[in-house]
Length: 130
Image 1: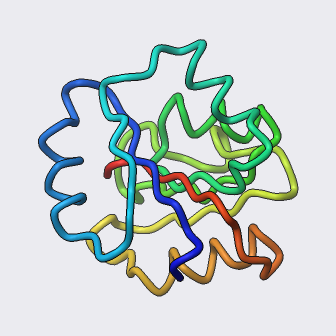
Image 2: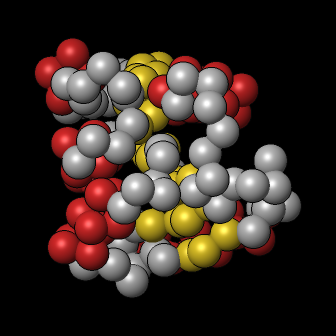
Image 3: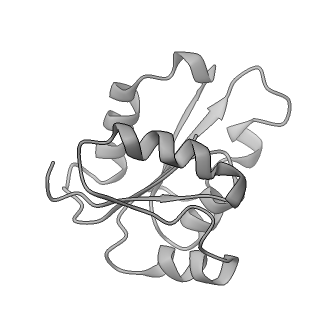
């Protein structure tokens, strides 16, 4: 969807992964990996144009849903400490995918995103590196 704006975020240690994702993207994006501090990240999630966060189970994912931004959070099944029943979002807007990471498909994430957005099209889309 050409109206989507993807923003990659993450720590400095994820810059190579973000570059890899950016190189494969067919849509425009902003790569803010390693750029935002915690305060800026929280402010970003509170921005009205941010409609969705897609992330692995991480601090920023939890900040997103606690900020009121729907999130699609990927939990790695069979990984110690990765349990959405204990650590998952507590809002009604977010979606969880809980299975081995190698089995999560783009289609699943897309459908979970549509559900989290209640089938509306975002004009600003944010994602994190995996």
